[in-house]
Length: 192
Image (cartoon, rainbow, N blue to C red; front, side):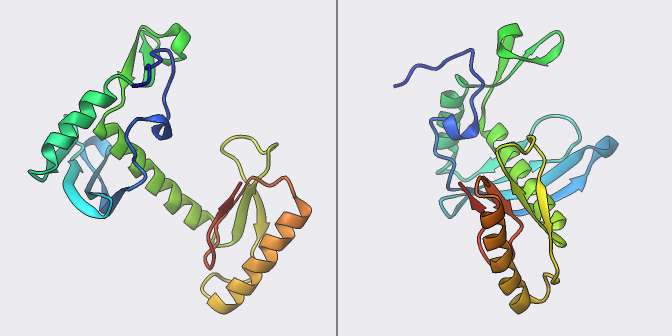
């Protein structure tokens, strides 16, 4: 077993649990109490529905209704994850690990919240790319994108496919240092 560094903030990819097969299906988000966002979804792991998850946004935590066969596995995951720092805090709020008094550990709930955030990012990218293709280069500021305007509507699938091929080739030619291209409708998004 590897030693856990309690001064490091672990990303979801660095956890000892493989979350690549985790998916949220039937995700429904809604405005709850005091305009906080709530959600309801099914948690699927490797294609199998293992739990219904819900946060009604009325205070309290997330509710996970796991199937009987998954419940012990869920408890085991939480025991493993509680050793891994997700965020650090002090009286000032969320801080750098060097200024921290304690850390908030990872949990199954925080993995689910991360999956919801990724779904929200996908929706945002899809909405932003109806009129352009987004791409990044090493000198693009974090959280920003460079763009190429689409000349064909995404609803015109045949011409959109031709244009996306042309745009991909053009971006790769003009910006050989490109690190990511997002917003394709007829092909997979690309990243180095």
